[in-house]
Length: 138
Image 1 (spheres, helix red, strand yellow):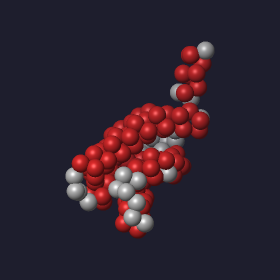
Image 2: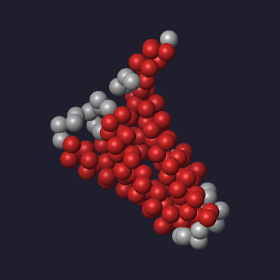
Image 3: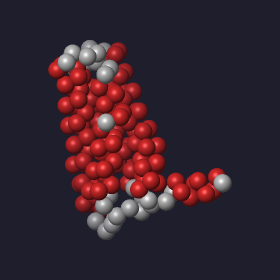
Image 4: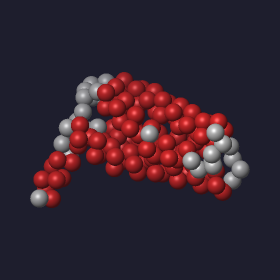
């Protein structure tokens, strides 16, 4: 039973990729969210600077994990430079989304400084799964 579940988890189907992405992306996103929260709750640092710091840490970790595990075996790996370039472009999209959510929630509607973590945990990852699967690691 366990080996069947592990085989399914390691499959290259969309479901298998989604499960692997949820595990690895969830861990990377949790690291970024924790760093953001630590910076905005323990210091007077601007929210956008905190978001940038979290992004810089997570983009490097995310590339290694997603390319080697989440989307392993998906698409063509004939041109690693193309995949790497696309990943970093996609990561800028992710950063832009998170920065926009941060501005809108904290400055726009004046919610507490911790609230952008909710969108970085639950909205951006869904969008980025689609971008990674269909464009980056295609």
